[in-house]
Image 1 (cartoon, rainbow, N blue to C red):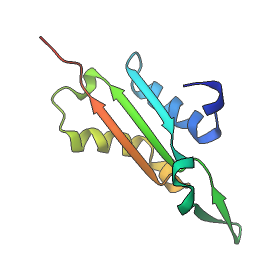
Image 2 (image 1 turned 30 degrees about the horizontal axis):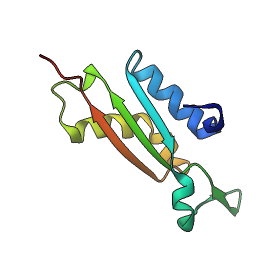
Image 3 (image 1 turned 180 degrees about the vertical axis):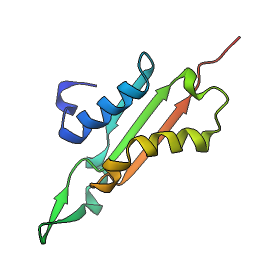
Length: 102
């Protein structure tokens, strides 16, 4: 994460994931610019507004994922970010892994 990535949705997602996965490896990349050809809009007070920060790549390595199926790992993240999806987040690419054990 770097200072140029600190837009409002990025900050909220970062905070939620850091609180849910403290001390774990987390990387968040805003890929919205790569998807500009399908800008999303939301209705807000009677008018449609463009929504930025719509597509993210999230990588997390966490012991919390040990023994958890990949679909359930995805559900964990989608549940955490439900409010973001309801306010314009459109797509996540997720790479969710558990540390390898000997």
